[in-house]
Amino acid sequence: MEPAVKNKTKSTEQTDNRLKFLNAALKKNLYQPDALIEILHTAQELFGYLSRETLEYITRELKLPPSKVYGVATFYNFFSLKPKGEHTCIVCMGTACYVKGAAELLSEMEKFLNIKAGETTPDGKVSIATARCIGTCGSAPAIIYDNQVAAYQTKETVIKKLKEWL
Image 1: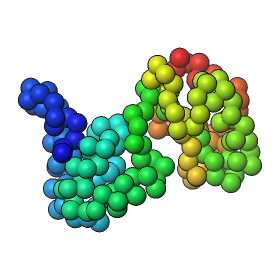
Image 2: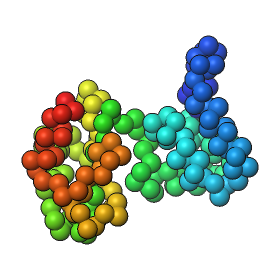
Image 3: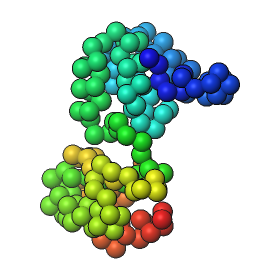
Image 4: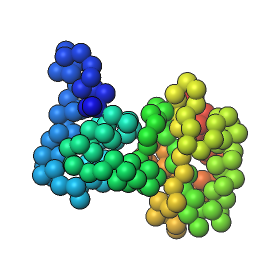
């Protein structure tokens, strides 16, 4: 089985270059199993998340056991097995951020959006995730909004940002 884009009609396949880029990444890394994390990053950037079909394709191409690929994809917080929302918030739950109120910020976001961490709003607008540490301990609490780190977050700044997106 190949990634979902490969199963679409031929005309869609021709216009969708994502699979070509994934194959180029596999080729660039010489189909080496130790390039698994880099390949997973590339696939997620291309498809937005790692679908079962994409993981199976990578498994086959790198000649790795499915348990290895699935294990790596589920171990790291930055890999997602579900489609993400239009906007994403990653709340740092590292020690410094936690001490400075990250858990309260996460709770406020969950209450405002009526979803839990790891979920996406029903309209597909916003996804919330957590990370163990994003490495910006000096500016805690920090949140990553659409790949941009925001330092010294408060309940007010979090809600303001979410309102901008909705």
